[in-house]
Amino acid sequence: MRTDKRITRRITGLAVGTALGLALSGAAYSQEPVKVGFVYVSPIGDAGWTYQHDQGRKELEKALGAKVTTKAVENVPEGADAERVIREFAAGGYKVVFTTSFGYMNPTIKVAEKFPSTVFMHATGYKSAKNVGVVNARFYEGRYLTGVIAGKMTKSNSAGYVAAFPIPEVVQGINAFAQGMRSVNPKAEVKVIWVNSWFDPGREREAANTLLSQGADIITHHTDSTAVVQAAEEKGKYAFGYHSDMSKYGPKAHLTATTHHWGGYYTKAVQDVMAGKWKTTNVWGGIKEGMIKLAPLNPAVPKDVADLVAAKEKDIAAGKLHPFQGPVKDNEGKERVAAGKTMGDEELSKMDFYVEGVQGKLPKK
Image (cartoon, rainbow, N blue to C red):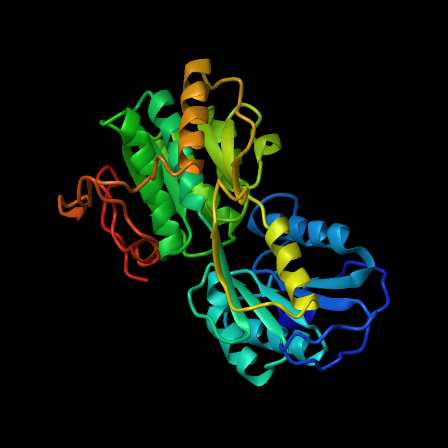
């Protein structure tokens, strides 16, 4: 899609204040609404990654009312186009800019250097600066729980996973799903197909159908569309949605979904900027913090399985269970986490291997 045809949405009818040029020093803002920008990698739609971020934006608006005005630009490719959009927000007087895809990391850092009075917050990356914070969610916690369901409900002992790019956050999800499956079904295997796109419904559907044809009777995805759930519905198989509840696209297929919730983080971050107390942070929230939740379970999930998942969910929130507590081996037999140990955040953020139960070799990014 050409840049000049990309959809932009003015979200509120509030008057836009002029940029005040205040430094990040604790100075208070005037009564003019604070302008907050959002950069999205895919269309907003009504389900998926971008949809969940847009729900968070709406929660921010509801919480802060006339104190803020927001604007979102959707379907922005990672790279030069992203840098242009981010720069336009900063140059236009936006005091806070949220960039919501891993590939926006370097463009965000580059623009931030030129606009030290603007606060930038980047989702899922690892680079920060004086005026750049990082936010991520522990997607892998929800993935582990869906893996438990898959391990209990599969008949073929084979699950399929449609994946976007071989970066740590995606690999964490694949491995956590496999860990959950094999915790209750040691014979379970996970097959992965990479589509090298965050949002490509056609390729996602094709990959899902291929996995189903190879014997997977439960499939899931780390991509943005609902194509995988729809493919499972059409084939009479089970699926797990991702990012948001996708049950309306597969009423019979959709067992549950790992859903993401950004509104609380967005609201607090903007409040901190308005109060002049924002500082560079690296926030990584999961089930405990309410940033990761499971969608309602399909009645097809047996009660004993639902009860087991509920108990494990509580244990994860309480810190009693971790999807990557040892012993953990990769799929070539090498020990990655020793018994009695747990993989730390730094190791998780660099994950570059498949665990036991995941077929194939991890491609190089």
